[in-house]
Length: 268
Image (cartoon, rainbow, N blue to C red; front, side, top):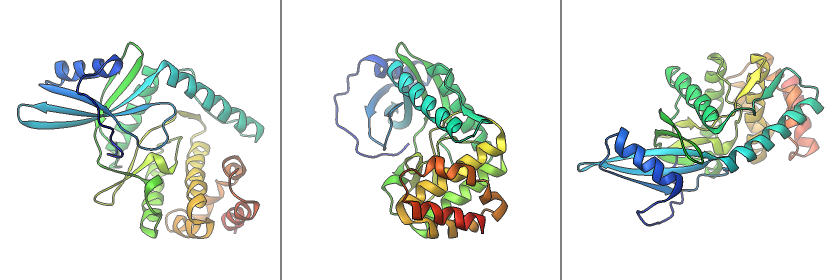
């Protein structure tokens, strides 16, 4: 998780923060633990926390992703709308899963992160999923970096994104929520992927949806021509054509000209 816009606060905590701190002291053997909220982009569903810990004189850093009952309700609305849009666009063989509890959602995310880690894809290491009084929390490795949303998109950044998309496709790992604020650029200029939405159904369709999300969201920043040039270095024409069913679904904020350019280049 990135270290961005950390807000100062007292060391005392309440609610789910206090529960997380108590767990880390008991189960992780920390002498001290303090949760600090921080902003890392758009997070309507979950609340990110940086956890400052200490064992003796040694500092320990963790990230915690918390989903409360309120966040779960937001999640349900988001995926209901997404699934409805799939149906309106004739996409019936994939759907987002909205029936899980906060604990189950974070268990699914931890499972995705473990699979990605085994595939040598850069992700934060998941450590524990906790049931909280108000929901659930995923405790994981803290990744120092900046959300791609706040990084100027360069050729290097585009190559990093599509290299990662190619890796995910090769391992049949579906992310489900590919957006710039779900990537972190580390100090070593490595791209780390965070967050996750459970997209079930036809695996090829789901992988094509991830690819299309990358194509279209990046095109909002630097234009389709530059994005597609980078994509073609990692994805075949046949793979890119899998984006066609999703272009209109994802690109509502693109102009008709840019949307046509993406389709024209994919279908060339």
